[in-house]
Length: 231
Ligand SMILES: Nc1ncnc2c1ncn2[C@@H]1O[C@H](COP(=O)(O)OP(=O)(O)O)[C@@H](O)[C@H]1O
Ligand SMILES: [Mg+2]
Image (tube, rainbow, N blue to C red; front, top):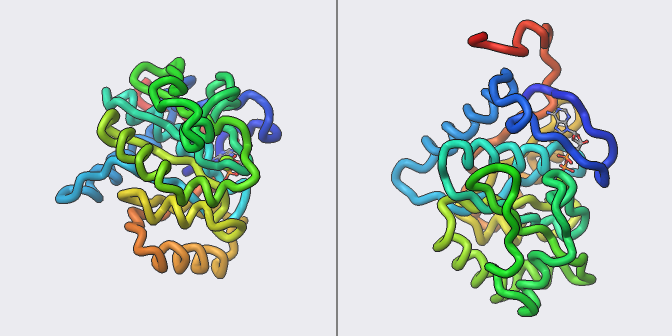
């Protein structure tokens, strides 16, 4: 994934290139990832996918949000769940409220259908994190989480999960063990090889189905040449 225009900080409104500029080379790369995911699942139904990485700020949230958009643009009913209960960003990216979300469902205060919100992208629904709990890993490994995943997979064609860094907390590993597939983000020039290997080992240890690795933040030699195509 090529480096694109960077948003500052985590708590500001972020822009989504696949929405704002669907014909750009970068949006095309997200569609290529979408195709590769579809090829990765020829003989196995792939509905729930977690996007994770070894460390912070490697592009998990950016990637999962853009993938959610390109799957929705293809006509799939998509639910994007912010299961990064440490540093949630889905509500900033899509500019929606986060007063209620995943944690309300996991603590049985709300039903899934009550807290899912529509987004500006047709076919894409959002489940934001909800209030940040003191015990994220416990909530994510609960029976309630399994029930939620079951209900979401029965309702949507595709359920994508954002997550916190694998090496920092166990949340990502827990999610990976519960989902049909995992995508591992590696940030060009940032992620250390040892960290990436450790992350892969953690995923293997929970028998997660690693669909592939996405190289993010790759600097293009001549970004202008690649900016647009077909115009
Ligand atoms: N391919 C990319 N090009 C430009 N900026 C990116 C890219 N991927 C991520 N970023 C930026 O890097 C920062 C961290 O990305 P984010 O997706 O929030 O990482 P994570 O969820 O892994 O912590 C954000 O400001 C985001 O906009
Ligand atoms: Mg994130």
